[in-house]
Image (cartoon, rainbow, N blue to C red):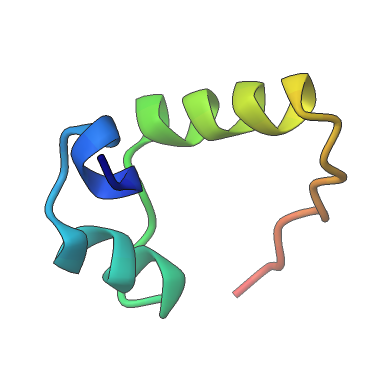
Length: 49
């Protein structure tokens, strides 16, 4: 099972997030923050656009 399938989104959606086409919605972003914290990834501060 790939990441997109586990997240319940299309592969294209993940690609668009990765390429900055658009950002994940707020609940998905919070989930990613929780995953990163649990995995002890350092999350850089968001850039102001």
